[in-house]
Length: 513
Image (cartoon, rainbow, N blue to C red; front, side, top):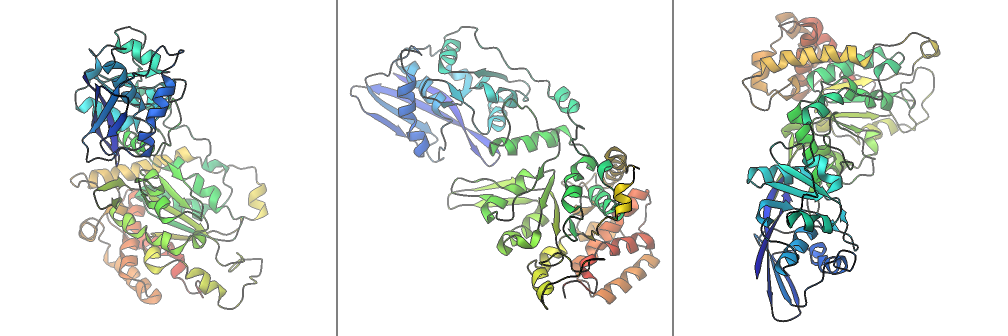
């Protein structure tokens, strides 16, 4: 008897429907074909153990041939256990075959027949709806994540006994209902940390406000203990809230990577990823034998924070250069290639030298001659050119630390950022994939960010004095455009250019030797 069930394979951040065909004949052998990996092949032992007295199912004593189509797509992981075991049970007449064609099923089996959570529940749910399936059956822990897709019945089950009874027509499983809009807006602006806790550092907070308003990359350089990491962690609290579409796309990426907590429906706050400096190339940009999103994709629509930037391997930093420009990373293999979104704000911090006290107002640098230049040279010029704002962070005096007065709240700063972003959204509404000043190209820059004659004179003097590159020229104008937007001004003025130039600290004499 030939029986078909349906699962899904995740490729990139999308899913492809997999048809599982089971046929019985005389004999006792077990064959699983269709390009399965080792984890899929090991499903035989998990299924045999799950069919025991406690579940009430029996392993059929026949020759079993299972095909997973299309056969040219590699099937990876243990999440195919559920559709495989249901197909075997249906082919051996232990459950009904009437409803099998209506559902996609995914889930990992434990030896006692219970179901363990899987990766990629959200893109699988999107595919199930697109292909007209009546519903999706998943482990209970994944049900809320998949249920954000409207128009699809999502059933969460604890074990194969519940799934078998449901397919036999019993009304034992109820669809999981998630009001995506309600859940999204209820949790949208809940932040545990706030800029109100930051004492002093007004110039740094101003730089972060500009970075958030224009989507610019940022580098903070200063001695240890000056507050670089503390300030960076508060950046998401002043960014514009995620839109529902952005939240769904971000959730898909984290779902594919298995980074969503059980019983979580949507990621409602912008991601903040802070990998350790020992990270590898593949872990940062994505890839591997079975490609997975890297940290730059997990930071999509959010912030990627690289603390102690010179301590990262140089090759790791250089692989970010292309994604920073294109906002997408393509992982290519001999048989296929996948694209992962990577539209993130890069925020970095570093000490000015190995000892950490070069240019410190009070403490003396003890590094050997040339050590500062060697330390700074660990970061390539092309990468530094892609960082729009380079700001020096100095220690906060005791008087400011001990004062009882509070700083400006994140909500107040966020309101100004949102207003600036609205101006940019209206300005670039006719362009696809352009949402903020940091994303505009040279042609758009000449059209929308042309400085006045006085502003051009200020920029000319800065370029000649500091010997800045053409990319630095573009970055200064983009930052100045953002400063003008924060002030609600249509044209880039001289004082906007002057302020933007001040955020190129590493171009000043006295840095890098």
